[in-house]
Image (cartoon, rainbow, N blue to C red; front, side):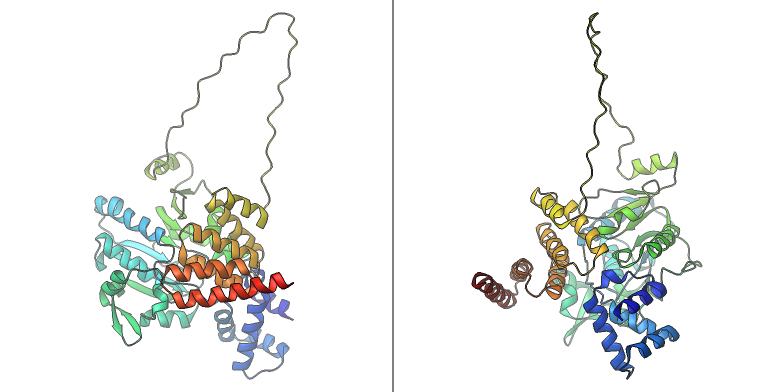
Length: 414
């Protein structure tokens, strides 16, 4: 029966049910059936087909947003540098236009606004549109009140500079709220934001990994329409291969995943140079081959054999990690999770790799996911305890260490 709910998500929302995992899908079905006072799954399936409102509520129950302020901080560091070094010196008359989608409960667009303010812009110098399919998330975003959990990895000085403490929450100050406009919508809609000018910067991170092949291709074309010429595009770790390289030139792909949109053909060369990509490539001088003496048998040169690209697997990803090729290992894990969103081993290894890359927040999210899928994932528990210790949660780290010790004892007993 769960398969039919997954198929409905694919039909209505373009979501890839394999990415969600059977546990989360079943949990969402049970929760929504309870809210609707239904006990029969067939009846609830019919309600989903007939009620757009319930379908929207079901999607919100399935996709639990994993977000926080300055998630993958290197992306915001690059954005700030771009504003200071390129946008401000150009003295453009128009405001900087940025899209954040999906924006969830507002942490990403507000992080963008704070980055722009820190870089020297004023609220009137930029416009940020924040799009999401979830009305519940948008209401939270407009309220702009957050708990300590949303500030994982954020320095207290930055939090205190832009937020006011009210009870157990931190409320964003008006300066950072100005210029941010929240919009309800879905990038699967081919006409979404058709009344808007293209954006100078688009953040669309970790959406495509939830979509099936056809929906992913459709959303990719929509995003391409929304990015202005020479505009920047920020995507997730596993999404870099979704965009054609003749249209999107990668900019320093170490750690962050951002591109500049270029026009195909000769115009792309100039854009590539502006992005810091060499316009000239040096070739080694030709090798002079001495003429063969008469009577010397002619040797037939064999074409070099192509080395087959290793297939994505946990073993291959682990080998990349052991070689210190952490970004490649992370990308392979992400691709594995696109195929099987309930792969605890992939989440565990990805968390360990991200821990090594000092992306502590995302590492924690992946390790928590691994433990959710496999309660006896020893490596995930150990590395999660290290992250908790690193951020000062000694009590939480101690609980996890005891849990790991119990698992280790059980293994030895067996």
